[in-house]
Image (cartoon, rainbow, N blue to C red; front, side, top):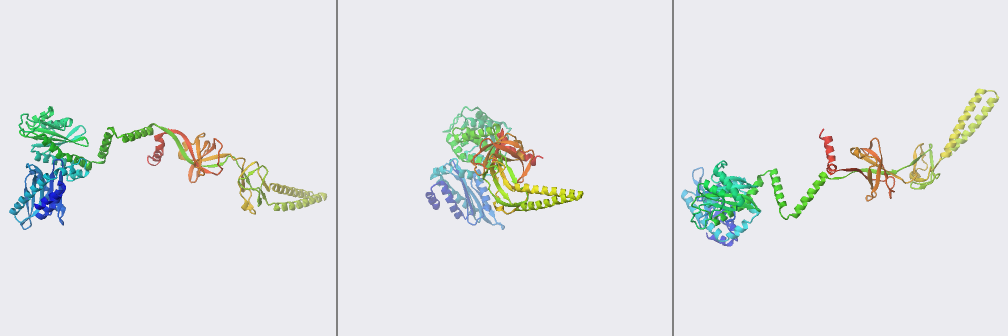
Length: 606
């Protein structure tokens, strides 16, 4: 006892004292498990101590059962345990905790080693004395501080500790009903939940099931609904009660009907709220000679108040996903219509505007496609005959005039061939005249034909000599044809050598995927941004659409030819970039969803 008193003086709060007292009791009774439950005016405390080396799963269940029996019965109980030889080895002891007025405020239970029934009774008496000391020290020293620390509304730790021992909200409601019946001396205690504007009766103390079709239950539920509307505390009891401090009955007809249905018993109802919303309704009934006092109902309400948040926590723990979503939506909507919350209201307004724009608005439908630049008109110059490149007079990027020499082919072979043909032609003409003079007319005809053939070959050589010098066909720009490294190389007839453009007029070539073929309309506006200058937007207009698709870079595309609507600046043939084709205005929802819908149509729906 001295050790307990010393710890009571040394600990700053009643809760700390209770936790410090459990190791002392375990040491005194050689107990592997000690458990205590203590109820204050506005909070409850439940503590358990397991000795070193003891198995908590083995010892907790019997001690817990003994504690609940002591709470329900309000008196001490002793349970003996014998070994296989029938010898008593352990005793399970449980005693109630009483305040100065003799009212139960909790219970204490433990396992103690003993060898006989008289020894167990002696240990039980000793435990009752120590329990009285603990109860007195708890309520007399720092009870107010402990209640304030443990019963703070919204304390998540307290709520979790209240909810932890119970498997469901219904089980907790039964516990509340039975404990209130023991503490208040009521004949019947009912617990109901508030579901919106409806009252849902959960349990009645002392009854496993609620007979909802009973007239008495109908009157009870109606009275609890009246408390929900007019609470927080309503009573109906005999007006001639002489008990000091008894509450006077109010003008509540449904409570009067409940009073009459219960045979004239004193009835009272309590409304308990959490976060400003009514959550729990308590109905109390007891004898007509035991009217309710105002301070008594206040104390009972403070006792149950910490469990209100625990009920909500249990509901959330056992609810499904849809229940959580529905609860969160309802809570969020209620908070939205309350004053303040301007930021949330602004977010909702912005979201509603966005949804409206998404459903009803229209926007420009634009398709980005690869694009490239080319000269609008070009002339390609090829090798006129098989020969050797002798000289190059100009390089690409140079402006040329009509007749300017671009390159020179080697003509020595042609000139030698022309001289040979001239000698053979002279011989053929001589043979023709000799055969004619000798009246050999057949041989003269053959010689004449041979001469004509050589004349034609000579004319061909002369034509090649005239075309050996490659010249610009018109004024313009040399776009391609850097042949400086091919001087001395043999060129094949028809091999492309130069590309000349009469000017720098540009033409845009757009590669439109066949999936967006519906946007391939002549006259459609577009804008082009080259890779070299992404910040530049050149306005163009589709002038021609290829009649057939073709493969480019492994894609099946339609080639669109577009022309600039202005004078391009800083653009050159051969540049590549991205062109954005404007395909008109479409519904916003269609612009964002049509690709996914088309993919589903092609891959899923068939």
